[in-house]
Image (cartoon, rainbow, N blue to C red; front, top):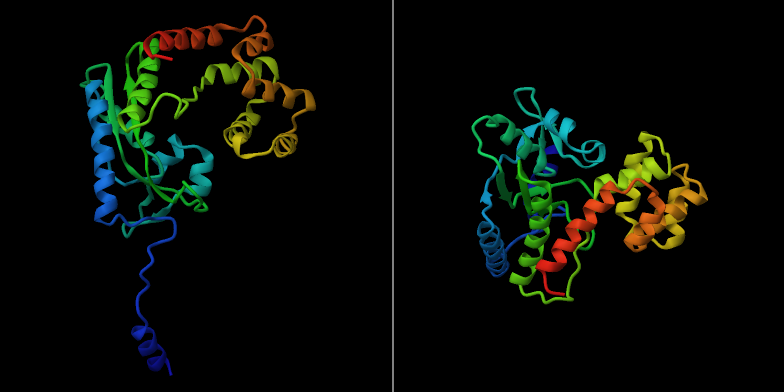
Amino acid sequence: MSNDSSRAKDNQPLSTQGYRGTRDFHPELQRLRNWMYGHIRQVLEGYGYEEYAGPILEPLELYASKSSEEIVSEQLYSFEDRGGRKVGIRPEMTPTLARMVASRSKELVRPIRWYSIPTCMRYERPQRGRLREFDQLNVDVFGGTPLDEDIEVLLTCHDLLMRLGAKPGDFEIKVNHRGLVDDVLFGVLKLNPSQKSPILRLLDKRDKLTPESFREEAGKLWLSESDISTLETFMTQPLAEIRALLGSQTANLDALEQRLACLHKLVPA
């Protein structure tokens, strides 16, 4: 009986479908991919960045110490190899980058200007524009001047999109400032540090939620109606409104406005 079952199984044709959440790149798609990545490399190397690469497997403890709790606990593909070592398949490049820089920290000349286009894997529900396997562009500077670095990264984003055929008005670049976020969460709202991670996850997906759903989800995080209104103001209103929220805590906002003013001079409206 078992032999018959085994033979029947052996006679079944193999599926032509790849693993869920991954893609095949047949020659016509690979040509387009190579064209796009070629332009990306030209722009970045024109800015003086050097390409690097790293392994797709890393010790699990590296991701546990350098990646977010959400990635490690919910999205990381991990297993134990035949030698009993716990390893993870790369969900992002930043931990590998940090390890590589630390391993040669004394000999590397600052500023370090590196970029990479790694393939990563995360165990997520596949959806439009977001698969389990994906390529991610990383552009990093270590040891430069913060003002210059921030402006250059934004200029690089602009030039990449223009090189790939976009026109002014076809896209928008959204700017985040961690210090400014902390000013609102801890300086204005007086929140507990343990609330930060879930609130940041909520803010990250705000554009995908209706206003009602956003307020409902925020209420589950022990935020008052006043707190939720403050977060909505922070996420939607001009910087002048945010300045009014901050009171005297404006150092991070001043720094952000300085960068934006420089960008407006460098990039045509």
